[in-house]
Image: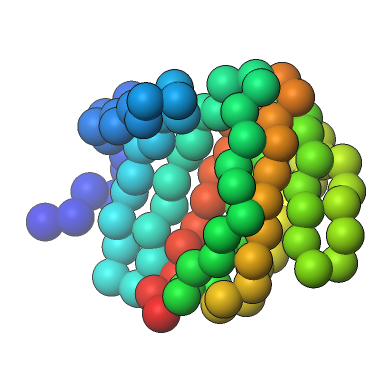
Length: 103
């Protein structure tokens, strides 16, 4: 049975070699991911086969897309259609919530 009320602390954390920590709540057609990115981290240019929305809860940095470079901070929301390339640099520790829709 799927829990209807979940806290992020109940979700297993995976931590990459660069210190990026992710906690994921999987769903039938989407996943919700909480990500903590250390200051100074760069995400190189990449894309996904699925649509993605990302909300910045705290922190700051610069997002790069085909539309150029733009600063982001708390309250910013990114939207990436399938196969839209993007890259980011994180100036301060940043907390994101990402929604990944199934391809």
